[in-house]
Image 1 (cartoon, rainbow, N blue to C red):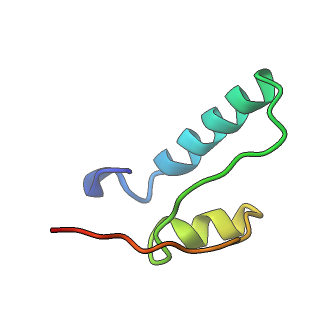
Image 2 (cartoon, rainbow, N blue to C red):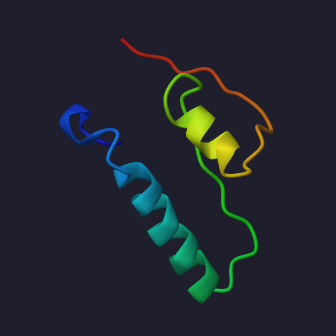
Length: 60
């Protein structure tokens, strides 16, 4: 999650790149993400991720 005042500056993509780099160093073949369709979903799709399913979110 990126605070609103820092959005649009590439912070989310930088966090993803750090995550991908760590996964490569650890020898991981698959990286997964949970995303909100309205926010990070489009960014992940632009980076080549595909949606493989959805799940409900419950709150109070």
